[in-house]
Amino acid sequence: MDSYIRSLDMKAIVSAKVEADDFITMYNKGEAILLDVRYGFEHKVWGLPFTCNIPLNELPDRLSELPNDKIIVCACPESCRSNIAKQYLSLKGFNAKILTCGMIKLMERLKGGKAKDLHLEA
Image (cartoon, rainbow, N blue to C red):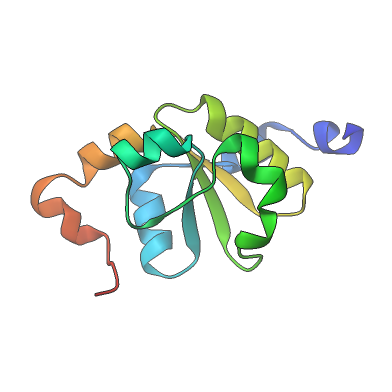
């Protein structure tokens, strides 16, 4: 943990953040997944079909569900839980980042005809 904290210089902190447009590009290229770390009841009310939903408190027991060969972009409505998830996954050896805008702003970015920007499998 100490070495991880020491590695957090400004460059590392900035590179851990992903904006909505950058996520869309990475997702469309097959380079990243969106990890929804909201609780199950939140996902049931407002789930997104292109996310992997693993609630933050279940993450330690479900790491095997995450790909090792992709960037894991952690997301929640704002960024509280996603920050925790990103740090945890980084310590576990994953290439994890934070969706800086949060899921709500991502959905605003994808509303209407702009939803076509995200290439979902048919």
